[in-house]
Length: 289
Length: 289
Image (cartoon, rainbow over all chains, first blue to last red; front, side):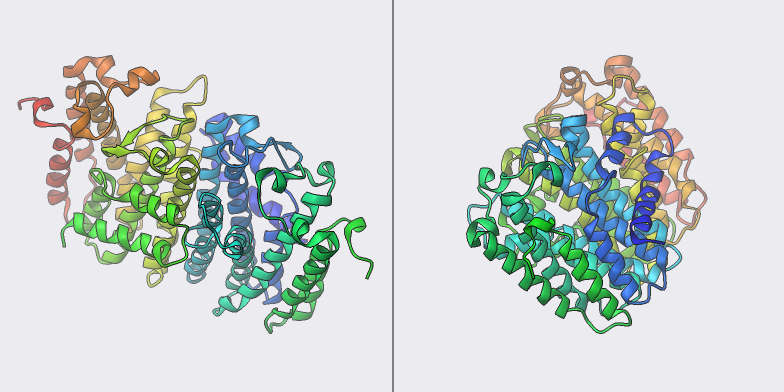
């Protein structure tokens, strides 16, 4: 089964209990709205790619891990879009959850998506419980304090922040969670060795996002551009120039690929990662190689 | 060790990873502020009481389950107090989290507390993984859609809600989570049979809360009174009168106690629950029996 199909099916399965009857209608609609249709699903694809490179001996575990990472990501988008943060009007090409359903439902949707991520892990790992605790630890560290995506967002509330700490927590943490969860779902005990790949891909993704914010087409990418400048956030393309940022992105992708640990599917994974990263920028922004 | 000590220690252990260094200072302070000092800790006490009545053969599991239930409760309080919901100025006798730290940190604190609840379960159940998935399922159902506390709060956003569904989800769900988690942490496979006790105690607690909102002393209970009337929420003491509500509370407590399933410590549990429920109202509001 193609990775994209596995991911969409695992996400639908994760939301199924919420839709089993008796749910307040707005919350139920908002949960589905926040998850479907998705963006690039880059984090769960990464998670599955790493699981497959390591033999993928429990596909249900890997699919659930990928879905959990994506649900945690969707939850963070819903909360980051709230009026007290970015006050974003649109997300993935449609009104943000709080614009469509109101602020209260948006807060609750984020909360329920976090819980649903763990609930889905528990349901899918019940038959393989030895892998459940490591997966939960990986997902939790990627989101909670001191250095998960909640901490990354919280650095925006501090007068002084080390830029690399902020970016690592805000983006790198969940990418590292995706690669490590993929490995742990496939039974790799030393999943820490998969952290560097995720962190570097996360940094590359951040640079690509910065480039799109400066030079992208808002309609194509489904969210407004120029946000970093208007919200006073750091942006690699403004700091390094467009050519410099594209150069930096390529260096980061090479460095990520060279960090792939030894595993049965290392060659295929290297090729898949290269393709994945090339897809981050539209053709007109890729450097002629 | 006394239950209160076990609970406070388990909560401190659950927050320890967040405080292990590198956390944005405001988020770290807000996490601690939202959890300590606690309120009555009635849900985790209930969880431990049920675990002990069932032999408490893995005290670390029961303590972690109790802490997880309390962390999920604290998260819901932080988010329920937000300006878009109750806009509460105080909680547990001090400024609410968003008043003390700002709205953005309050959103993130709730999110991080939910994740911390699961993280702590994973850490404490790693050596007893067969009990981890059931505990996660119980906690998740108590919080998520379709009928957990998030759903309860979401009923407030609907034009039409069945009052009993609303109250069951908003309060009963986490009480039922507490009793079932206590049983599951102690290895009871059929933890569903512990649901009725939790649901009825939750309903009793709701009635006691309604009585305090109408007739309590704001300073003693640490939050403003008269909130239900000003927020247009249902209140048993306004509907039934004070004496009628006290009567209803007593009926619910009896019914809860009679729902305690057969177990080694059933007698002690009955006595403990009676004492716990008597403590819900100050002496001047208890009926002379």
